[in-house]
Image 1: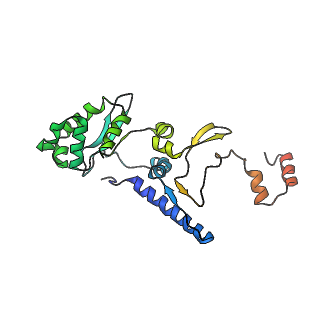
Image 2: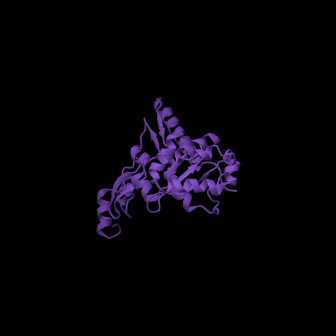
Image 3: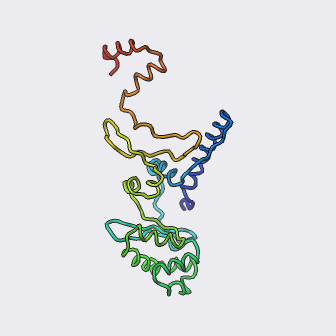
Length: 235
């Protein structure tokens, strides 16, 4: 039995707690409050890489213990897929309307989630026939318009370069790295009005901050730094 709750809910909650503590610290220092703008999508996007690298659970499929249907269906195009989940009988009836299959909504065998699970071949067949005729983004929009949870399945590149929500939020920022060149970097999932943060620069190359650390932390003079460079101690 795997996790049956939304991982994004937990990650966003942790980020919200961190943001609240930061805002309280700011209030303690300045006496002023601030607004926190937190996106659940950005929170999980910033966390996703680590989650995937540390994952060890065995695959459990796309089924849900209470919702039905829930699954991933091939759409028009190369390797394009739609994910959806029907949480109630009312959503099932709305789904049947979107599919153009009103007879499924009145089929007694499919009137409950348990019944739809038992008749999985019939339900999945209807969904597959419908989804394969549409682009994934359009199919998701049609379902979302009726209140049905759905979304186009995206790989990492699609998420970074094309996700409309992340693009509208400006989550990924373009930076120029001296070795890697131009690339998109994850932004900050927490946005504070009083103490806003930003991605100021890409990750440094080896030794990029050596002089600054020795000057600001160790207290070395500019002359001493020049002599260390001349002697080949620093590069």
